[in-house]
Amino acid sequence: MLLPGLAKAKQQAQGVLCISNMKQLTLGWIMYTGDNRGTLPKNGSEGAQPTSANQPNVDPQWCPGEMESQAAVPGEQTNIFWIQHGQIYPYIGSPGPYRCPADRSTAAVNTAYPFGGKGNPRVRSMSMNGWIAPYQDGLGDLGSATTYYRVYNKDGDMAVPGSANLWVFMDENPGSINDGWLEENPVGTKANPPTATTWSDVPATYHNNACGISFGDGHAQIRKWTDQNLIRDKVDGVAAQKPYTDLLWLLSKTTAHK
Image (cartoon, rainbow, N blue to C red; front, side, top):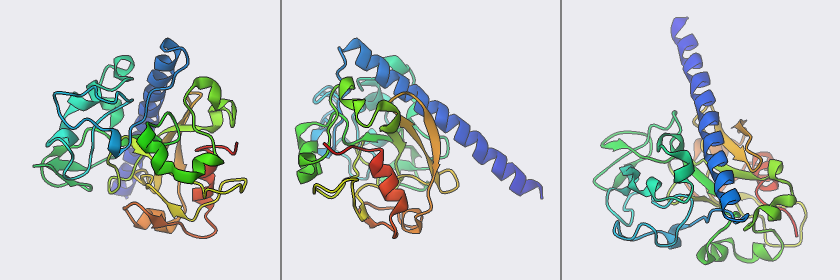
């Protein structure tokens, strides 16, 4: 009887700390924006990552660095050097908030172990909404959907759907996390609201099938998922479970129709 109670208490404590981490990151993101005339911190997909530890500020962004196996720079999965060169790090001041307390992933010899194993803890669990301040290569990843849906580069752009309704940071699944960008794409049509049937990148399920997620106004929450495909599979491109309730909810908080 005692062990289930302890496990539940641990999960609850991890959830509280995850929300705190999300709020810290988002506050740093907001403070950076305020100090840069409303310009949002940049968001880099894999094509906009530094390829050398000697050039960490190439393509400056909220948090450079790759978490997957065979990252561009050996060992960057476990090196806080990359976090410290992110645009928002001066407002955070510690690498701790970048990693979810429930994340057990590790890496060694440039090989990632998403569910733990050899090596040391990976330094980041969080990714940013790919529709927020992407580099040009990211726009290419978003594709034709940008014709019909909004990309956010300035704080004023968030008026639609409103900062409280636009997610910024999220725990990404340890089996899919790589760069600091989490991509979810609506189908590139004039359909409103956005529609899609596949998870482009995969949210985490650390917290009893839930993950931490923060929004542009600074609030954060633990979001419970019911999509069994999302819960079971850990790689990009997972087909969403009909009637696509979880995916459509997230898309409605990711971007808005023009």
